Length: 319
Ligand SMILES: Cc1cc2nc3c(=O)[nH]c(=O)nc-3n(C[C@H](O)[C@H](O)[C@H](O)COP(=O)(O)OP(=O)(O)OC[C@H]3O[C@@H](n4cnc5c(N)ncnc54)[C@H](O)[C@@H]3O)c2cc1C
Image 1: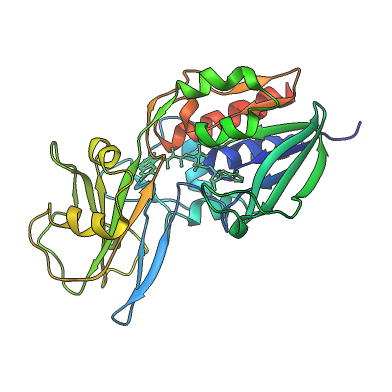
Image 2: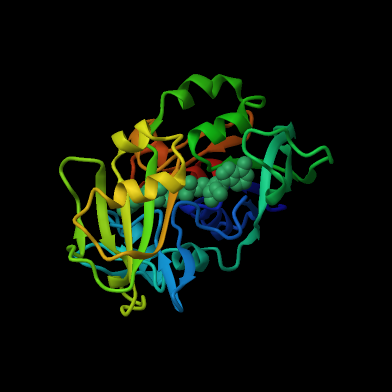
């Protein structure tokens, strides 16, 4: 019997878990992601300033494992403990985890998938070079590249992006995807020449700032640098969603006790960060269409939920 050919759209943790689950059972898997590498919201940003190499985990801050499967995956990917017991991070950055998990998989990076065509059991995936896609603008005039046919497709994108991709092949999912809620998160990446008088981590109960952490205190980072992550809470992030990044960074910094002048300061807007209203099922699988959806948004706002969802979809696809 020939092995099924399956396309997985999205190489965040849910897509990686799905692809690995499928490949482990002999399926031929092709992963597509618009990013330059696997990882999605498990991400690390790098920069240089004042002769220093700087880095920050600007997405997920630390991972926790309730289940044995996720704990084993973290160990396999080389995660190290950080701070409170049970918190794990990638080394030398969070992005090291998805890179390790993507090893051996057929990953087409920097490909922005724009359409799923064909028919159940013979899906074609159409994609453009990611750098040619501009949010809110028309697609490039040139015809997209295509791959396929695939026996099944797994879409592992945040719900709004998944909804756009499955609108034509699965119009019945629209209302269910629209009911899922994910908070945005403005994240400031700051570096200083000397250490600010701040605690190593802080989760304020009130005010615009929702989380503060000294990234350079994580294992495997350059402890001589002072790289800090400041996240706005969901309310503030939502209220300032369309604000200018150049204004957001100093505004959030000003909410904290006075710090030395930063040598680097930038803000990153995550439109989708932590799930507030999940779907309430491990994944969505349409057997007649041979089309499935997975992501943290199916279950909860934690990386482990993305892993559980991706694994559940792999099991559903292979029956
Ligand atoms: C600021 C922030 C802080 C967080 N903190 C924590 C934390 O401390 N602990 C924790 O457990 N979790 C945290 N999370 C949540 C955690 O990061 C997510 O639950 C998890 O990474 C989601 O994985 P995913 O695969 O479901 O989605 P994603 O990681 O979003 O993966 C989706 C992938 O799809 C790709 N993609 C999107 N559209 C297309 C397209 N059209 N074509 C091709 N590819 C596409 C994207 O590039 C991305 O790689 C945080 C998230 C954020 C943003």
